[in-house]
Image 1: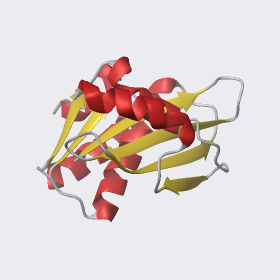
Image 2 (image 1 turned 45 degrees about the horizontal axis):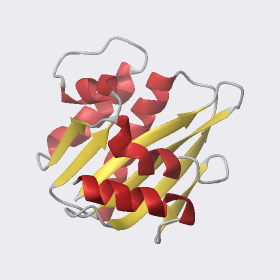
Image 3 (image 1 turned 120 degrees about the vertical axis):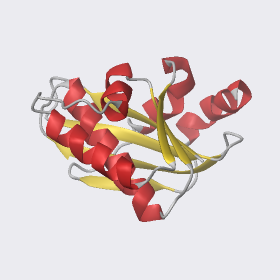
Length: 153
């Protein structure tokens, strides 16, 4: 299984959202989630919250042998590093790492933006602030990109 993640942060809005998309080993859509949060945050903080959300989501689904893919090299490095992160956002990354350390079957890796387009689009699915939407069938807006990404695998 593979979960691609991406965030949607626009400075002039007082919210940000995340796109989490679960696919099988052939790149076929299984399900997705779009949580939206209140607040104006820097992108790195949105990425940290997104990493925590995806880790919790994987655990809640009881999934094993999962690869998390992000197009944020900073996020991937923060999650794969044993070094202490002293930024304010470091507390969130530490919690993610704690959850990941409990689950040795979850890997975090970097992918190019082109390979992460569906997560990018899922992050833009309309949702109420401080809520989430579980998506069981792919939205029309992502179908073309799902096919393209599955061909890249």
